Image (cartoon, rainbow, N blue to C red; front, side):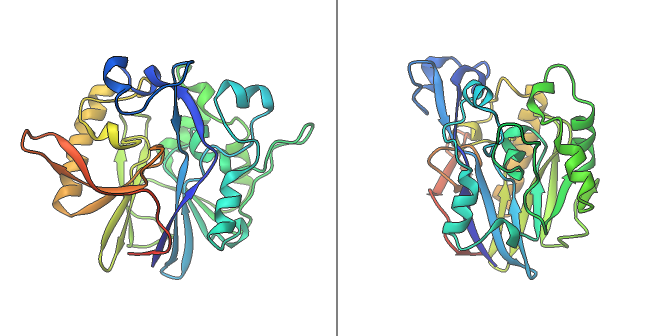
Length: 287
C-alpha cells in the first residue's frame, strides 16, 4: 500500500475566520496574512494505491467548479482543475479511482468531484468508476443545511452523487466498499457527521484529519475555526482524538496546511499537543 499527497486548488481565506477567537497577534505568527487579512490554505487530498487492490482518494479539495465571480469571492487561486493535474503527475487519472471518501460535503472538500466550470454548462461529475463514500449524518446535513452553513454546500451535488448509482452512505465505523483497513472516527464539533478516515497498514496508520484539525496550528487544543458549529465540543473531541492517535502512533494528514502534509503528534513538557516528524509531501510512501 502506497500513499501520495495530492494538491488541489488552493484558497485564500480570512485569517480571523480560520482561527476563531484567537487574536491576530497570535495567529499571524503561524501563518502570515496578506494585505486583505487572508491566509494561504491548501486543499490537499490523500491518494492510497493498492488498498486491498483498490485505488482510493480521500477527498477532492475545492476544485474549479466555481464561476469566476464566486471563485474570487471564496479566494480560489487557480482557474484550472489542479487536482487532475496532480493526479496525472502521480501517474493516475480520475478514471482510475475506485473509491472517493468524503469526510463531509462542504464545497472546499468535494468541489473537485466536478468538472471545471464552463459557461452555460450544468455541473458534471468526474470519477466515472468510483464508489462515493459519505457518512449518513453529513449527507442529511447537505440535504437540509442550516442557514448558518447553507452557502458551504453545492446544491446540485447530492442529486449527481445519487444518480451515479455508486453512492455508499454509512453510519458506522467501517465501509462495506473498503473493508477493515479503513476505520472511521466521527465528530460533530465542526459539522454534523464529520468522518475522519484512519488507514491502517502493516507498518502503522495515517488518519485524514479533515476539518477537526485543518493543519498544524489547530493541533493546539484551544484553537478552533469561526466556521465550527460547536467549538467547545470540537475541543473535547480533538483532545480524545489526539490522545488516541498518540497512543496508537497514528500519523496525522492535514488537508489545509499550506506547507505540511503529514506529521506525528506528541505532548510537550507542559502538556500541550505539538507536531513532530513533519513531512511536506508524500510520494509513493509505503504504509
